Image (tube, rainbow, N blue to C red; front, side):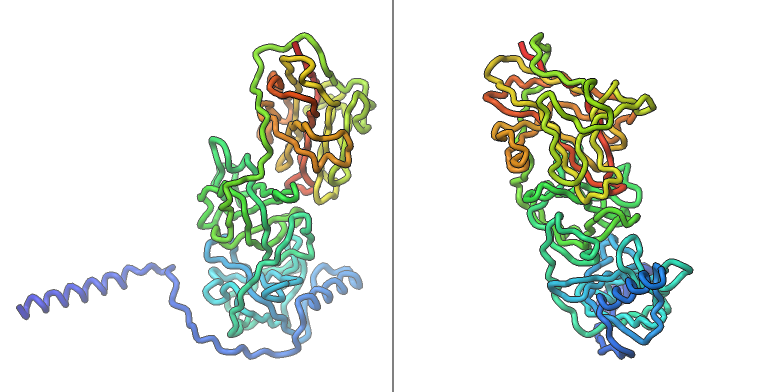
Length: 475
């Protein structure tokens, strides 16, 4: 019996030894939980004060970056978390744990960082010898490399970055998409009443966070506000641990860091983990659909026709009962002619936000009112083309309660007509695509049919659409 016990003990010993020996080199050591108060030198300067020094240097000497020579330090709270792979070799600090006003990105050649500088950790940056500037459009600190900012080396990290004993609760700053400004980048925000665009999550092929064939460095998805009718880009790294998860189909709130894309041109929101995405409400705010399907024939009675040939090239579309309305931005629907690769059909109508400088572009082109009870068998046909429409969208909509006053367009109810085919971004830019013989026969009463374009002037959201050969017929 004693021999059996000894054998059991030996087996347990060798099993434990084997388990220890199987720990991978990249497994993380248990961090030292004893955090000592940091020893700081010099004078404290706020993150905003630091930014003002940079702006003064730019205004006075024309330099884009500033190397700090004085013995200064700044303080903030960590709001980034690279545990899930969506951030890499950078810390984002904001000035307060709640109601923050400014943030800064710290470039560090270390991964992972969350073990030492966890979410909410009060952290100080010793600034003497470091350089501040704008990296991809956002306020950044790191090591000077010529006229750019490089990452703080691993051997230098504890010299420049000092964690404090406090770990604060970070309270997300409520914000609407329409309130985005560059001054609010590097802040931890909460977007309420948002959802992913129906083309991203509904239908036969719902998208993942960042595992689609076209996703190279980041997966960019359209996130829309149900309360505002505006949208922004939700970006996920293709190196994120959760990249292959399906996007949630509901609506709700998202806690994220407001930043800019790689080019520093368009707003992006980036989450620390999928647990910051809380879209559990199944009552989405998608437009109601008016789907009469595709008609088998087209009636001989012409109710409306527009080939744009009487429009003056380069001017706003007008006449023939059209309402050409700018809801946001500075761009409206205009006539154009081109005989190049992306040629027009004679004179055509176009809308696009490229180089507009507008944060948001929403433009409507609405046909005159129709009485759908006066005849039957109504159909709609048109053609569309695109010039790399990218993230912009063009929709065909119907309203039965718009009163014809342009000021009331945004507050009227507009239902989607899904049967019409509108060119997609992956369609050839040199071709024109037919809508199909769209039936309107299930619509009753009076109402308006309109085209709604939405985009912005950002390089990654800069697309344009062309429209022509519109005909409404009936029996």
